[in-house]
Amino acid sequence: MHELPITENILTIVLKHAAAGHVRQVVSITLDIGELSDLEDEWMQHYFDYLSKGTVAEGAKLKINRIPIALRCNGCGKTFEIEKSMIGKSTCPSCQATGDFSLVSGRQYHIKEMEAK
Amino acid sequence: MDEIKLIEIKESILTDNDIAAEQLRSRLKAEKTFVVNLMSSPGAGKTTLLLQTLAALKQTYKTGVIEADIDSMVDAEKIRAAGIESVQLRTGGFCHLDSNMVKQGLEALGSEGFDLVFIENVGNLVCPAEFDTGAITNVMILSVPEGDDKPLKYPLMFSTCDVLVINKTDMLSLSDFNMNTLYGHISRLNPNMNIFEVSAKTGDGVKQWADWLKQQVSDFLQ
Ligand SMILES: Nc1nc2c(ncn2[C@@H]2O[C@H](COP(=O)(O)OP(=O)(O)OP(=O)(O)O)[C@@H](O)[C@H]2O)c(=O)[nH]1
Ligand SMILES: [Mg+2]
Ligand SMILES: [Zn+2]
Image 1 (tube, rainbow over the protein chains, first blue to last red):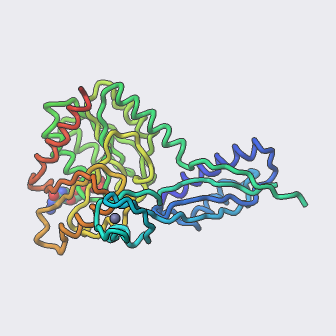
Image 2: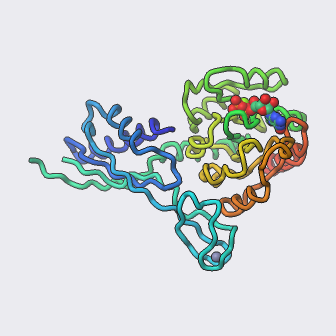
Image 3: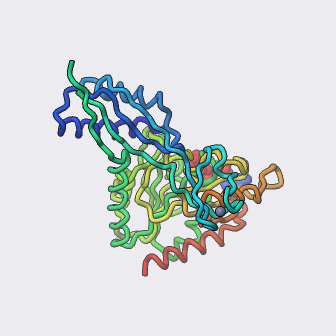
């Protein structure tokens, strides 16, 4: 739902790195985004295409890696990955606890790298 | 053909907002203004609970409200009618508030003189969860008619908030909302969450929530 402001941030960061690296054309941008985010890949690409018109990033493809959600069981210390649909229903695979977990992964929002000419 | 090179970026997309939010929080701590960010789905009862909470706290603390209605003044006018200073941020269809908008709101209010400021965020459970507003505490309201399965659908919101207020408990007997099911989901997602069960309509449970908040503000102001 907030793909637009997020995409603006991505473009700003990419253009900063493009200028620093004397890039003439950005080919692709790789993002690491946690499974917990509700960003829609298609909308991000759509906004990116729109915002990047006339910049060196025009035409760049967004490659989105989804980073799995992982919880740590505060009872036994075990870290385990879960599906988003299981987030409020999970059981610790090690000690079978059904509560007291901390989120250790799934909220990432990173630009990893870009390919450029 | 030009050769394609790989450029490492390794930057957080939300950095700008996260940094601005941290700066705002430090400023609020220095100025001693406790800011509460209220989030919920549309109609869960943010304004109604706010009015009840203000009634319980306005004697003790100088309190203000920042409203983020999409395009109306309805909520800000209700707050003003209750004798509380409020400002309306025109979000113009924006789906969340970020820390810069909150900063503008605080400036419009003249935040320095305030002990306690509430933000009524835009009504939705997705976007506001991703944007740190710089608030001291984050509160979400879940109302009984929305169902006990909401933590499964909006896990980020439930995992980022410090407080959950379960509102419209007067409607429990009319629905299949199961408190135990909800608590089960929360204990997995956010075991340290403070939970209050209230009815902003009848006033049930509002005192416990308001007393808790009063204590937080009092600790903060010391
Ligand atoms: N039965 C019942 N109704 C409530 C309660 N709290 C609020 N309402 C009603 O729910 C409706 C929405 O309440 P608001 O306080 O306007 O909700 P809101 O979250 O501020 O709504 P938006 O700002 O539009 O997102 C109103 O008709 C309220 O009277 C409650 O505890 N019980
Ligand atoms: Mg409202
Ligand atoms: Zn365990």
